[in-house]
Image (cartoon, rainbow, N blue to C red; front, side):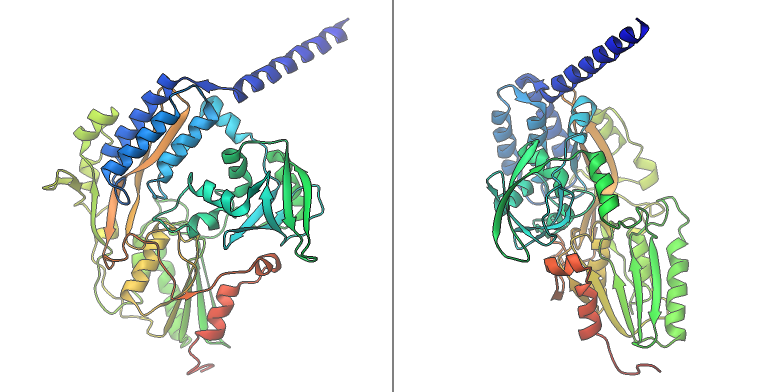
Length: 493
């Protein structure tokens, strides 16, 4: 009898869980709820975000919001409203501004089943890098369509909902193949979660076109299969590493991010490391230096400035100006929170009503940096970049291009060359929906040629990987630099 009660209790619990899950999947927002939060987000983006109008006029922004209001004039599934806000944010073309979901909606989106492939995007085409499905499809095969949607149409639709800095799409194409904005999550988010997908692909070996059905996969099963089928890199990488190849006379400096453990680390962390590197370069008479900024997610731009001190022959100030839309009183009126900006940043009002940062203690981008004569490097400088070079790393690439004779190799970056909205960010949640926006408060303008400030950094030598290079693990960008750009004079001396 006790067992029967236990079984009935378990059955009732399961039914409740299933009913709750079904209710969550059909979470509906009413027009009044969506309109109220759209107005709130519009107000915040207009009055708080410092870069809303970098790539659009107020009239263009207002017109887009009106279109979104019309789209939400009827009851809508919560997931569809989330896509509306994704489009609103993507149109800013600011990589530091994001839409996200929370609460019940957050659980729905976070627990969506995944498209069972990791992909690589090249030339508006989708290629399979990792196969986590139960189908025997060889890595390197090309996805031609999913549920009748052509691969280039899929890419264009996703880029309507997600963007990186500026209007180049290379950064987002790169991130869709990586761990942070992965295609296997975003495809079901934009096109709808399915139990199975109709897949048309071209086999990489036979070149024949084949059709099949693949089942979607849970987050847990995805991770489990990936760990079994593929060797994955450690989740935590060292912030930087350094090596010297004496035979080929080059030093290799890999910087994975511009902060070591946290933003509050000692200010001399990177200067000490750089000094050790350039001391060894000078001692061993190395004539070539490769700085690898690929997949560097950013950090503190001052840690890039410290690096430049060993590479420039003149004083420089990285940031021309850092501004914000208001002071503590201004933000208190709009957000209900003063944000405590006045004193830490020494805010002073400008003629146009905005405020500029005058205190350099927290934002050393505004300091003047002098060349470090001891261990100054005067040889051949090569910088590797790609679509994962973002935020402060994009600024680093821009400064290296502006102030040195560096040869940049790879693909266009994710981050801007000369502006950034990556300082001091806040979240603003909807009052009536479970959608929110994460946005920056400060805008930095760097001392980069004004004609390229608002674009991401373009390499001198555009080198990208083929799908075969990716599958085989070939580093064609580094190989190109080693084969074509090293200075051979004084080699092995």
